[in-house]
Length: 297
Image (cartoon, helix red, strand yellow):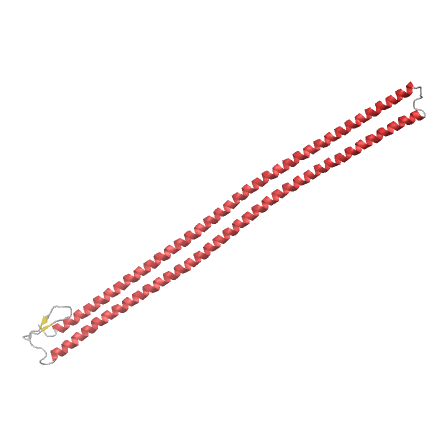
């Protein structure tokens, strides 16, 4: 076998070993980088899904809150209208009772006046009868004055009765007017309070909805920024791993080439230097096995 076979084989094996180590390092780095990118993308996708779900839940909750407020306001306004109707009906009933009292009062006045007129007529009849029985000339002198005085007393009594009836009628009419005014005012107050409360409820519900949605969007934006940072960090980390793998592969290749060169130079000088190599000397190359010089060729 030629003497140059051993160093050449040793050099080739060193180069192959370096290339193999470099390829393995590069492949391992690529796999690790791909895994880092995959995890980063999965985390980013999960974050986006969580953000979408969070906003959807906030929107659903907001809509439910608004619908609940609208339903409560509808019930509130229905109750307000019912109470207003009851108040209005009560007012109408009370006014009707007072109007009946007024009618009854005037009926009583007419009856009192009628009784007064009858009583005074009976008294005048008795006076005339007494005067006739005594032989007094009717409607003359003091007898006429008596009749006139009796008539005047009747008119005065009728005036007093009428005045009392007017006072009582005025009180009843005032009560009727007051009941109408109070009933109308209470109805308007009930309706106004119900509408104001409904407006307050709806305003609070909308404010809460806006606040909840605002917090949801702020939280979503923060999570989105974090997800973007994570995927960028993942990409940078994957690139760093690839770069480190490339450096390792380059080092492995450099080491293989260096060992090959070293083996070649060493073998060359051993071969060229007299007395340093005897026939049939066994040389252990890198990677195991052995080669044997044959100087017979």
